[in-house]
Length: 337
Ligand code: ACO
Image (cartoon, rainbow, N blue to C red; front, side, top):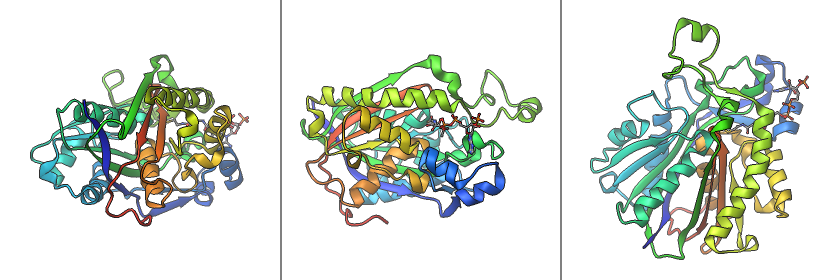
């Protein structure tokens, strides 16, 4: 059996910056509250005419160029997103068409903020079993489109962006060393978008009741995240057959700095080993980990041979972790753009 590795990285960050000061004008909140409770100082917001596939397209173009791969060479496109362009067709199919990836199968993975991490695990299965040689894995979100901008419990937390990677085969012992996926559907109501599906089809009433917006029980999600991240990291490390001290960098889902700090403390690992960019983007859901990975690599925090452990959690409830020995022959790994 072969393994898989990441051979190209891309990201797209919308231009529009929304600061905490701007949010103070929309809801009863303050920069002090947001920074002290979450670590978030600003987030990016997509344009009104930008959908998740548009962000995904830009990130994918960069990842393909970085990997030196043409669209025709892609065997499979997997898009992880909680904010697809529409219920169907899949955002991956819209992306496939725009890229001109004529040989590619395409589908979406839905695991809320964990979607990209799940998608990467699926891609690894395809590549390591020999069923695909080149897989494009994208995490893309326009959370701003499903946020209730009058709800201070959620509007201060989220942002928009996209991250993409190209995955190709590599020899065992290099590239991805392990994956671990988990779910607990009993916690589903803690983060949900109640209307617009078959349980509660969209209607005037659902819009009136604001059920087309994301709802969240922040305290429950917080408790879940603080429990789940250390366990998921330990599982990825165990499955990789390494020791936690062998990990050079942790790349956690960027939801809240307090969650990341609490995980570091529970694992007795220095905070410096946890990559953080939540202050600039907020929680970008499925895009969070691939964008963080991109920035960690581009800024030189990940070097050839380093062991990186990525961990995500989110609605479902879901969580996923992976360990990778960095082998990327990236052509552009000089500075963050
Ligand atoms: N500004 C000011 N006050 C606020 C705000 C705000 N934006 N939001 C809530 N408050 C108030 C609350 O109303 C509450 O007031 P009360 O005590 O009078 O009732 C008080 O602040 C404290 O509220 P808590 O919920 O206890 O605040 P907490 O310290 O738990 O922080 C937070 C809230 C930031 C939401 C935290 O619970 C959290 O980060 N949870 C995890 C969220 C998360 O990661 N979600 C993403 C999941 S991934 C996915 O799949 C989408």
